Image (tube, rainbow, N blue to C red):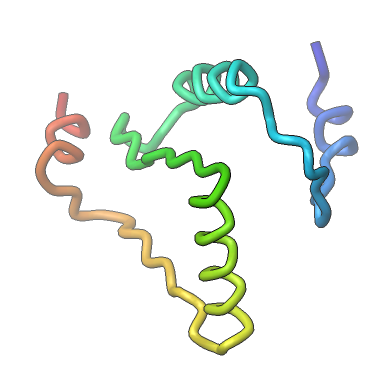
Length: 92
């Protein structure tokens, strides 16, 4: 098992990717492990979308256009005042 020092020193940001698709089983394993990660007040406010083929190319082109065209999307993440199912999980 990695210790904290080794984990931090081994971290890196990837700026290029291989053209090889990630095997479906690998994606399933990563998502299964992610379910065990802690979240604030057990709200788990995440959704996962996996795109491939034509859908991936359409999404990629739209994102590149948004960034290079100056209309990059803005992400807003609420930090309190959870409502609905998220609030129910918070108080459970």
